[in-house]
Amino acid sequence: MPAEEHVLCIPTPLFHELGRFDGFSADIDRYRAVFDIANTSFLPRSKVEPDPSFKQLIPYCVIACGGEVFHYRRHGGGEGRLDAKRSVGVGGHISSEDADGGAEPYVTGLRRELAEEVDLGDWDDAWADSVIGLINDDTTDVGAVHLGIVHLLRVENPKVSPREATMTDVGFARPQELLASGGEFETWSQICLEHLASAGSDLL
Image 1 (cartoon, one colour):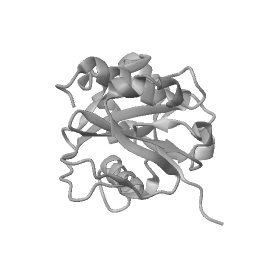
Image 2: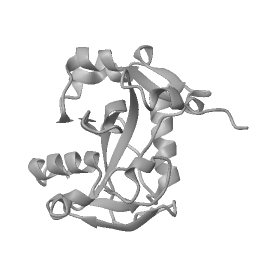
Image 3: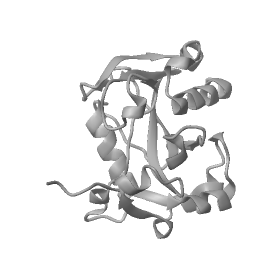
């Protein structure tokens, strides 16, 4: 029987101490402590999924090209509560296995998740400058136990292909266009699209 997955978390009271918010926050400096390894721990996923006293850290990568963002529909996969929803985010949990042999499990896990889900071709991964904000949404069961770290990954051409069969209806479109069918998207994607649309072309 395989060992249970342990995922990277921070205590929810720490997030509240830094400044709890709902929606999108671009104030990255304020939340630097979230990334401090001294404030994080790997806990059994079965323990923290129903426990809002912890926030699981989720890299949420938005892939952009020419003012448009990559989008897809998810069928099946690890989070059944999001099944059949559309999304603009690629990423997932940071596992304790990502800490093996390195001091940056978050970055290691982010790269692993991205490589597992999409093929970006020959792309220069400039991770340090890619964080544009955080997403928090305590109004849903999923959101109450997760904190999204939003990365904007710019590619030179839109030849991005999914590596997972669960990802369908893929393509690129402008945030404003996707917002027209916002109800089809998972909550985090709706929040992210609203921020990208309001920020305008300068961000993308």
